[in-house]
Amino acid sequence: MHKRRFPLALYGTLLVFAAIAIYLTGVGIAIPRRLFCPHNDAAKTLNAMLVWYSGLPLVLGFLLIAIDFFLYLPAVRKTYKFRFDMPRNKMLTVVLTAYNDELSIYEAVKDFAEHPMVKRVIVISNNSKDRTLERAREAGATACNESIQGYGACICRALQEGIQHDDTDLTLLCEGDRTFRAYDIEKLLSYLPHADIVCGSRTTDRLREHGTQLTTFIHYGNYFVSKLLEAKHLGRCTFSDLGTTYKLFRNEALRKILPVLCPYINLEFNPYFLDTAASMGFTLVECPVTFHPRVGVSKGGNVNNIVAFKLGIKMIWGVIAGWNEKRK
Image (cartoon, rainbow, N blue to C red; front, side, top):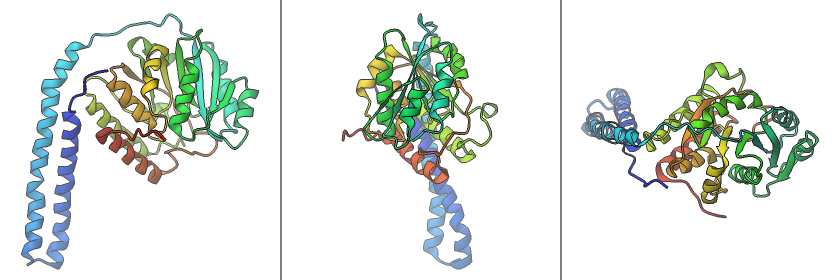
C-alpha cells in the first residue's frame, strides 16, 4: 500500500470553494442590509468582513493547490512508467448485481452470455422479492442470493464469486438493469494492458442515450466529486465518473483488494472502492462506455436529484474525512 500523504490539492480546492461561498454570502446580504438597515454599523461591519476576509481562504487554497501541482505532481509522474501488460487469458467471468430486476435480468444475462469473450455469467440478487433469480437462471446464468442487504455487500459477493474460477483471469462487474451493454467489452479490454482496473465512464454525451437517469445535475455533481477524488490522489488517477458499476478487473488485483473492503458501505460504495484501490497503489484507467435507460424502477442513488444530492454529500464526506467502515 502506498504511503499516505496530506492531499494539499484536495483541501486547497475545498478552501477555494469555501472562500467563494463566503464572498457570495457577503455580496448577497449587501442588498437587504441597504434596504432594511442601511445605518446599522454592526450589519455593515459584518458585510465588509465577509467580503474582505474571504480572500484569506482563497489565497491559502490556491497556495496549497500550487504546491501540489508544481512540486508534488512532477515528482510523482517521474516515478511512473508507461505500462503495457497484455493479459494472456482474455476470457471473462461476468458478474451482475441485481435487486428486483425481474423485467431486465433475462435480457441482461443473454446479452453478456452471447459475447464471445464471456465464459460465464453470474447473477447476485440482493434479497429480490420478485422473480429475478428464476429469470436469471432461465437465461443460463448461475444465480444466487446475497442475504446482507446493501449495494456494497452485493458487489463484494459478486466479485468474490467472480474470482473463484481458474479458467478466467478477468472479472467484469456490471448491473442487471440493462443500463450497460456487452458490446463495450472490447473497449474495456483495449484499456486493460495499461491498468489493474478499467472503469467505465458515462460522461461522454454522444455515448449516452436520451432518457437515462443521469440528469444534468447528477452528471455535473458526479463529475465534481470525481475531481475531488482525483485531487486526493493527484498524479495517480484520472476520474470523471464515480457512480458507474461497469468495471473490468484483473483477478490478481481483486484478490488483494477484496479482503480490506467493507461490504456494509451502501450506495457510496463505488467511490469508496476507487479510493481504496488508488490508496493501495493499483492502476486505474477510465474508458468511455455507452449508457442506456434502465429497464424497470430505479432503487439506487439516481432516483431523482434530491436523492442524488444527499448521496453526493455522503460521497464528498467520504473523500474528505474517510468512509464509515464499521462492521455490523
